[in-house]
Length: 285
Length: 255
Image (tube, rainbow over all chains, first blue to last red; front, side):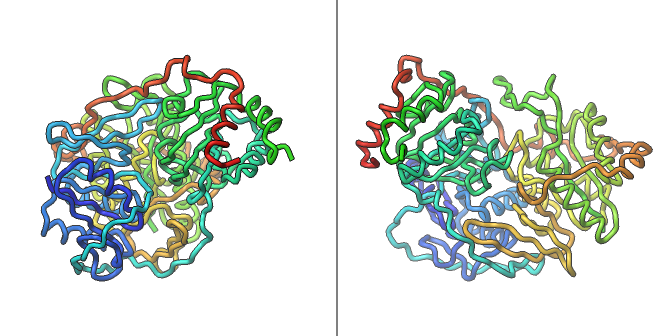
């Protein structure tokens, strides 16, 4: 099978796809990207992205195209799928091969996930993974493509970096943390040099800014340690987490987060924070 | 300016049918997808500034007619409901085909299509890109600002920057959370809206080919729905969780 992996800045999906075997070609949307194919000039919009990808596909005729979840790649995947009349499996977290059919696992809410397959070829699939991995240098073939005057990017303003993206420890808070406990949760986070994040419901009511919302429709994080306080563990939230260790505190013994956690504390968040204050010096100060 | 807003009707509470893998819509209260209402507010503001028409298009079961008729109070001039048994079971690409074909047929002189970035129930976030491709128009997602000058000016954040885009009309833009504080009822529209009714189109009028719509027009298939396995309660720490957490953090060299 011939796999095309389309990446931009984040190339972590290469590792995941490599596990499936098959012949792999890496395509970068960044003209300086380390890949087998790269654009001859910068791609700034979806129409250009699509025209570049068409050119690469003409040459390679892949069986599957994997897209990393960078914004412009997600847009291009959708545009490309409709232009070619192909099915698109969006936001897969896991992959598996079942007698030559590729199946993506997609979060479906309520502790359920759906196994989805595409019945058209090539199969298009977006994989959520924001890691950046070192790859041996490749010599890209530069592909030229048509530019479009229908859409133009005229400006880019840098904003400040989001510290939660690079934090070693992230403390996530969900609906199970009472409003009055938030200052405590934040203080605890500071005491272990962590960064605080939240689930979508808390961002929706404006308790936290959007750049702190972790999950499928928010940011992705890859900390060493993720401490989930009062988070049920909806798959949409978990889709944004690539942590080495997950510790969960939840008073509901049936919280799905416990299926993912290494240490599963089934106690109210309030009690655990209170106990931590007693024994953790940096927290009690 | 003719502004189309695609509005999805979603269940207030998301439940998935384990057999079919589809969202359960029976006996669940229906609401408008919240992000689509933010798109509606952007549309309303543009209409206020430049004049024209604000038109809602929704693909939904006929019973949502009543809910959709409440859109008039927000200042919509027309509300179009696309409904047919043949549309049921559509995946994103089949839905994009129905919506874009209907817009082409019913509002051929549209200038701008606005929608929310994703829906509460499906959340694939792919509809806009697919519709734009089928209509062959430019597309930007995650807009945090929509302004009209000589052409359409969009701002959106991407990673650690804010990008400014200029789009030629007609175009499709999807908006992100926080772009505005939502749409409010306009008293004049509330009165005026009572005289208006939702325009209903089935596939009899639209005449879309069967192989492009509904289940037969879908290119993805849910083959299995799996329940997350929960650990047995024996694995849960019921007492002194703080101590376990402290031990772990100590071992990891955090404290």
